[in-house]
Image: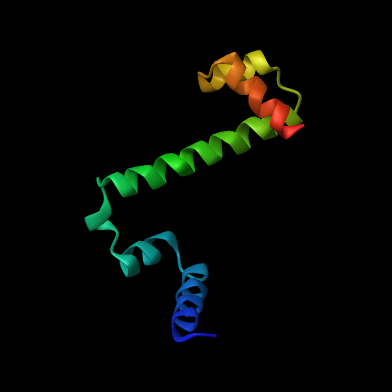
Length: 86
């Protein structure tokens, strides 16, 4: 493994054992907050969470209409997720 790979492994290993607060302190994310990169990462996380929640609701037999109402989404957007999920 290259020296960079070893360092990355060590950082990832440490991150898995730290709390959210400890990770934030270690990485000092404060300067990134408000940047386009930070906002982009947050939005990507929100979208991934919404997708997982919609998939879970589909598994629980929620109607496409109800899911669209809850998440304030277009019916077609929920239908597309349902098509990809099934």
